Length: 578
Image 1 (cartoon, one colour):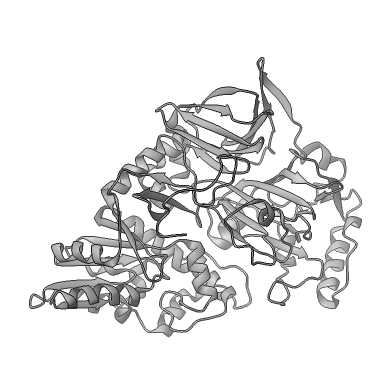
Image 2: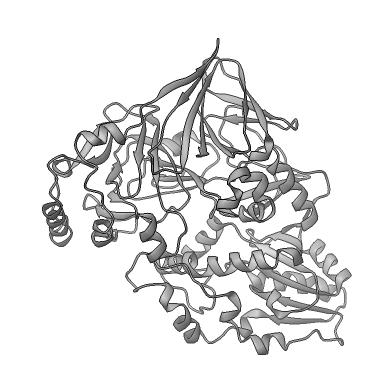
């Protein structure tokens, strides 16, 4: 993302990769010089933040300004007070499973467990120096009575740095291969640091965006809170990001501007996977991204309304794209039951999914449910033989294949065997968990680095529902859509989900405009047919969204009016909690 966005050169019907919430002038500050001047006024500060931040770069840039101004600085670096690397590795080992395991379990430690806390808290400001700074992840654990500057880092930038070997996990001194680093980030580092961020939220005075190696933008927390309050009453769109994959296609790359075209494909768009998406604020053209959890910590009641007590600060609905256009089939897979994901991985909700067909070619297919003749023992034997001997499996002997059509909704409650076939653009509407995919068969292909992709037959067979077979699949796992409301130029279509899904789906179809009440519920939305729409909420906020852009109307918005900007009928998907 650029440091500054002077003007947006996109048409109203073009997908925007840098959606912003504009603040008043003078709210986002640019550069280390401006941050240094803030620190000079305070004299003693805590600079805390996320894993993956280039702490040495920040220290060096600030120190240059202090030196130029003849100021002495006492730097206390948190990395000095981490426990020995092997001691930390022993502490977190129970949460990482075996080295070859794809998943771990959410860490139940606290961030301070990784530090030599007595030594750390014993480091006090030096009255003989002009400035005192404790810097690094966990800096607020020092206990200093000082303003906290929190340096946030978007998850996509963190993963780019990880793959480049530019960062390590928290408490590690060596770079590992990306597979193990991501697992440790997901199950340990992110858990500890998210909890820490929540605990110190009231102490934070400044939030900075650490995604640029040589620059920084920052904002006062009070001004960020004003922006979050504004979003929580109106419309939210996170910054999307895009990832290639072994089965990836070309719909995203060919139809979305301003993304890197120098990739083999795009398999995913992280439209709304909030553990890894951020919110972008703008002032005077300067951009600042913060993680979505700031909004949920600050405004969960306004966002989720009647469901806030149940889900707390965990946003429960996910939207993402699976792009197999001119690509390949996804693996034959299933997802864990609620008890299984809670007992084995420490999650609170499970990966219940649906596939909404946003676009597809003729004869595109979705694999879903078992053939009536399925024999579990035989199926497992064939899968294990394929994994062992690299044999192809005629998968339709066991799993049903269904023709996909635009606007179909395929229902995938946990335990259901499924896969998206080639030549689809799938809008995956799901519960938020997103990495717990048990692959049984992956068409004998390698990943983009030329390595075999993990197969998880044991986990899959601990969760597969073999009763979802035969005629039951058509009856129960393909949504039967019906019109439940209509007027002269609009229709409301119910696109029902499975009884096990805790969310439901409507499609609003209209020619001109239509007004919708939130009834104190959050709506997750996307224009799935048409060129562009405008949404105007009850508080007067107005925003335009193009085809395939995801946006969220929080419960506190109360009502909104959708206006069709195109010449043909607009169709908008609305997912909401039951």
